Length: 415
Image 1 (tube, rainbow, N blue to C red):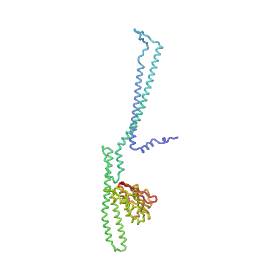
Image 2 (cartoon, one colour):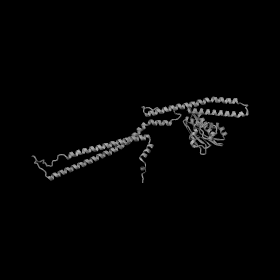
Image 3 (cartoon, rainbow, N blue to C red):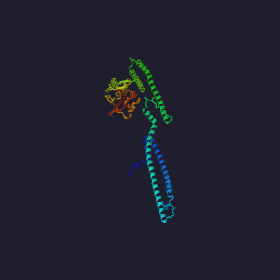
Image 4 (cartoon, one colour):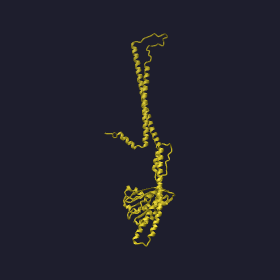
């Protein structure tokens, strides 16, 4: 039976590990491998030298014991005079030499065993120490890698938080002028450019919208006065078309001013009941609902929000207006503030591709002919998202199972 691991080549395994391991883990693994390789090389080097040195020392010790003086002649401690020289026989000399050789061989065997035992113990305990130190070096490498990558982590978190509302935030990294400090400074410089660009764009939209309101008002006055009754029958439709076009242009300018104001953020806030503002917006749009033959149902519970009442009312009004305008005849609109403290507006209407729902929050974005056939400029949901973001909230949308759209707004609330 084949081993599944045998089918994976080392290069493939290396590629998989390279793709799945984080940079911090790779750095810690590199520290551990470097320490382990250096320790293993040192262990081999010391073991070889220790074995060679002990062999030479034991050989010299054995030679000293084997070549020492041996006198087989018997001596008598009881003799007071000079001992008479005696010479052992051939058989006794051979026996003595054999005993000396046996003793030398025994010493050599003992020394060899001692040498092997000493080397084995040194290798075993050195390997244990190397393994322990490798684990400790891995933990130390993980900590050092995390400490070294801390500025990079700070840049990542700042990039995740970055949006149009917090472009003023900066990293302002401290420390030596190294690569990490250069990365932080480059990021701050990029934010400076983005902030200037967004500020210039918002200022242009606000100024242009404001400047256009005056000529539109003058144009409407000229149309009403210059084409006042009585008029020939063929000019009456022309006057009505001009007034409708002028009114739509004024609505567009007002929507752009509102969008620019919400993009700038909140100047002053106060505790406001969003449920009351939502009911007021639905009541004010009842005539529009009747015109489109749409039934509106409002179910709310008190919801206190700290924010700008004017902007919050525009948020509710835009949601209800969009739900009425982009609907089927005889359709329904349900406005609800539930116990989960969220504002939800659901309507019936044409089916919407789920992949294109996010595009509804882009300015001047409409999806299909059914949506472009109605009055509007495609700014309603853009204004809703801008106001919600200015209040620290979120807006999500999802198509209904039978058509239409469900928009949910969550805002930070005050208990």
